[in-house]
Length: 154
Image 1 (cartoon, helix red, strand yellow):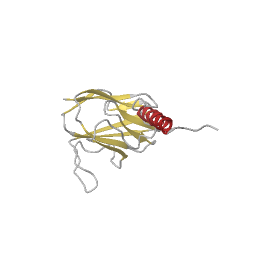
Image 2 (cartoon, rainbow, N blue to C red):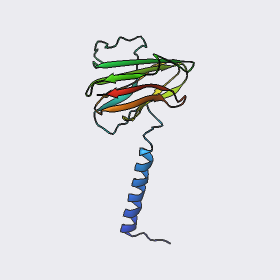
Image 3 (cartoon, rainbow, N blue to C red):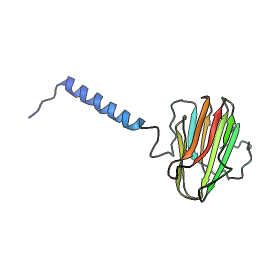
Image 4 (cartoon, rainbow, N blue to C red):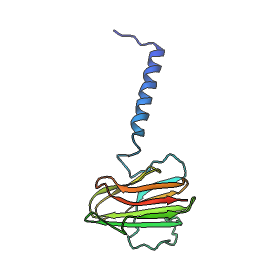
């Protein structure tokens, strides 16, 4: 029979907690991107969106949809990106919504902000966040490994 001392139990609990934290942190890629993760508390959750790909650049706010400063909409069909890959510039502090519709199931990922959203085939997926970090950030899909655009925050 093995008897554990309180100090040994404490060390084991700390080791288990550290292991859990390391596994959760990973490389910033979440297996379940339906819930956004971020290193900053100002980022909002990623959610499936009813917004269509033809949405206006700045849609009017409704009771369930907060007004955004910048709406970015992308469609993917047969590995072709519309609009074509390029840079999109937003101002620091703007509320940004990225909506992507893919013809195949995939996962949207915003690097630097570590946000993601599931992209069921033919159904738009969105992320919303406050652009509070300046720099150049890639927005891509994980399964098909397509760079959708580079987000420039100034």
